[in-house]
Image (cartoon, rainbow, N blue to C red; front, side, top):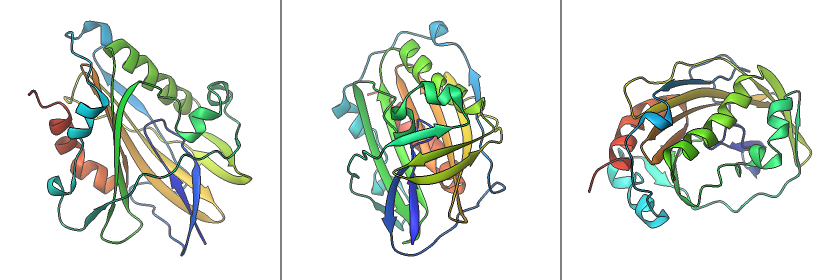
Length: 231
């Protein structure tokens, strides 16, 4: 049985879905490594920007026409309600179980799309949020900073233990106003899954692209261009 670890912008989302088959994705890093880095201008130093509605954000998400052939959009997954415990990372524990299940970025305006690639287990997920620049910056920084401060820790979700660890990445320079980037490795039952997450704030829009490292690198620029297009 394969345990799928659903990952989002918030760092350690561990909603577990049991699906057939087994898979290990170790693209781009050693098993058991994770990391985060932040670059860019502080939120208070950027231009004023309008906050976008969720409906407006939805139109700025990548769709299948923006991607190469072989991508299939996944239906929205139901919210997970498993009990979640973080062991060995006090800073992340203090954020509460929402941080471990993808519920901490509670900005009122948001949109999300997830795609599988080539009929395989490779996925890419895009999330868009909109709020005042300083609120976006503070919200995403809290999560990334907590995770960066814990090289290794464990998450127990619904009774399933997941080992986590860390390795620092350099955030992409020259994109948006602020950037964060990290690799997440989830190890459980002898299997490891590696996920890259890159977050970019451009004015009042926060973009987070997560998934297979190669897919994130391939589509990050395109996602940012569409998310920040001036109409």
